[in-house]
Image (cartoon, rainbow, N blue to C red; front, side, top):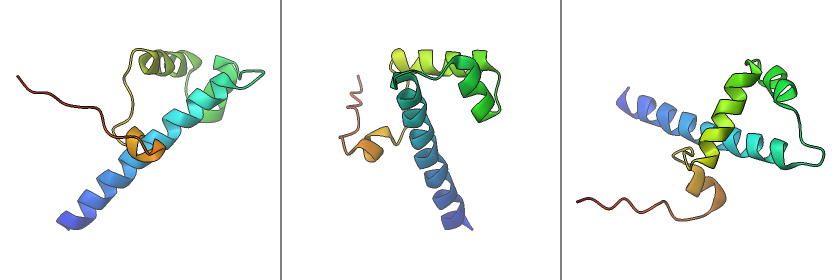
Length: 79
């Protein structure tokens, strides 16, 4: 059971990274999808989608983003 729960968590993290990158791509296409169009596609209110993308701009990304893009994870220095 513990292994299944761990695998499920890892899968959820990977899917979150994919969702984030698809959202970024949807906003960077020409023409960009509107917030309302993205909200409708994701079955979320458009302000929630806009808020999520603004968090990306602040550097808040999915845990598995590095894995998805093939880049090393951010360095986590501890005091």
